[in-house]
Image (tube, rainbow, N blue to C red):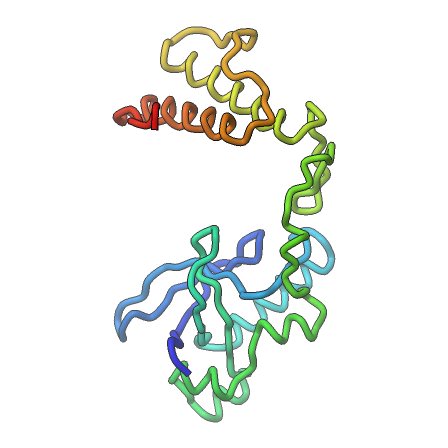
Length: 215
């Protein structure tokens, strides 16, 4: 096996990402975010989500380190990985400290979560946005769209943020009646509005303006 690294886990996020420390050498560890490859997870607050978190904590706390095999980075700049470990009793008996051997001889955590029913195979279609829906779920919480339209909702929040930023930069009260960005279904125009918003944020933070208009 190639590209196997030793990792220690510091935190499990609400998305079941693993905030890890990867061994660069014997005395240096680097912080990285790991996403278990090929898995779709339950909501963090659901019963199954809590059972998943408890199992991950049990595994993490029972071993001195995990072996990680990387498959590049995903769209969220997380390392997509398979994770391996030797159960605590075997780890103590063998005294194994080589992550490559742990990956060869140990359990695959990804497969284990599937076998236990704590995760499902990743479904790409499930993660696609249905723009016709008037509400959606995030972490098992129902969120209704004020406008009833996903793209109009994005435009509304672009408007709101620009109003607050403009008021902050000018030192004036917020005027929510002033039009900043008309609702649109055009994806390009929505990106344009987001770039305007980023431009205002950069100015508010004391940074130079973006040089992007006309490109």
